[in-house]
Image (tube, rainbow, N blue to C red; front, side, top):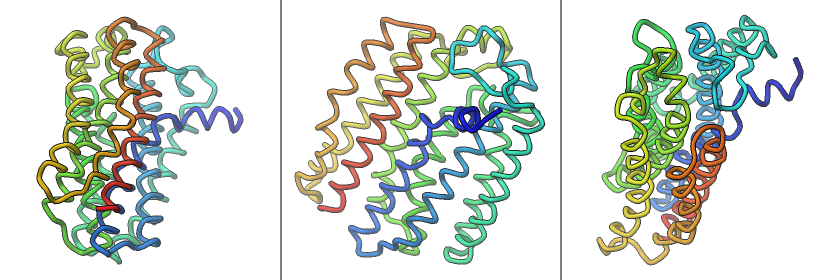
Length: 291
């Protein structure tokens, strides 16, 4: 066991999913002259800790439930492979949650009861995503969970920390971010359809099959890029809101991989989707700040 194993355990390629909504929520606050560097740093750290907690919990509980097996197509899991003992991964997951709770306490002091609800829901989500009698990820609700928490909840929560309120425009801005982060989990579940089905894990991809999963992925990406166009068409936003369109070309190779490949090659599509989400969100945030 070494630092490299822990680096793999936290799944760094998925961390953009945590950063994207915070960046966009902070940009909305900056547009409304409510930006706070302290709240941005705290929200970003909290989001990253929650994401890492989810990843460690998933590593541990999927091993416990015999979902991760030697024939899985995704990157090597630390618990299943024996590179990190199960109890050590469990303890790391609990410790990360406690640190997130400590930071969450600070955010609650600043944001009040609304942030309290978000912190409680997020920490419960970490556990319920992979554990409990009805694991979210194993019962076709993973995509819904990811969209809600990495879209509206995270974007609106970040904005609320700085502004003390929310607006319809911020909700609209949260939707494409939620779609693109959801697209990451869609690729993950598409890759794992075979092994998940054999393990009894009923993801949405297992339930609807590979073809509909691929179509769903395309829908999520295309509608993510459509929303800035609709925002521009509304007349409220300048041309700068169209900046994310500059990276649309990066989605084309991902579409090609999704429809023509399967198995481990989809790990590349997953990483490319995460990169696309981060690039989109960064340009989207710049466009929002430019108004």
